[in-house]
Length: 145
Image (cartoon, rainbow, N blue to C red; front, side, top):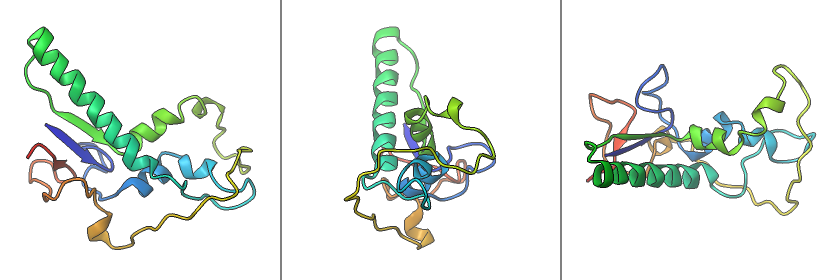
């Protein structure tokens, strides 16, 4: 079974709704995009959603391999949407200085199109699965149907 949520199925933020744009901001990607002297911006590509999907697929493939090759029991793959963003930015994390006011110089794309965002809390949840959260895991949306 795969569950996708903004902050994972356990932990202090497990029940909070969110989507790809929030994951990009929470993971630090918006800090690196846009003009170096401007505010943080969403990238023109939906990386939060795409990378979450890839992380889920990798987890499912690893679980299937474990089941088929090693005889392991079924696995629960839990994907928090912000974690693939942090993984993407992994090499930049050690270079970040907490409290540093200046943003790193990045190669911004001058023709970046703005992405539409939703402010409706109902649509801000992970929309990859139509199921509501389960009582056991309030922030997770099982996608095994």
